[in-house]
Image (cartoon, rainbow, N blue to C red; front, side, top):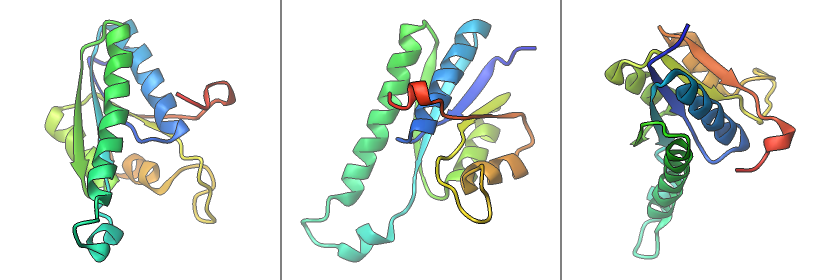
Length: 149
């Protein structure tokens, strides 16, 4: 089985970078089209601080753009066609919307390194995507050998 339209959700975590590596590898092997999405949360801190010195939003957007550029460069190095999108809002909702709007056949996400009492193995965003997605979702664990991009 192969998927021709793969959506990979990335952030600046080791798990996000590992998910991108796996998605690019799958896309290269299947001659698939890849779309990378990063979702920036609306941060209350940025709106609370306010004033001309507040460049938090700009810096967060630049960080998101850097992650997407890294994925695009990785895809290009494997001759994979890749486009990128940055969204703002609640990550799992934006990922599901993008999967629906783009008609992704597979969603690839990293398993969170964060552990909490209610979800010891998955981050809440990944768990929500798994719960509400109507398409296959591949959850990629971070490997120790590839902890950094």
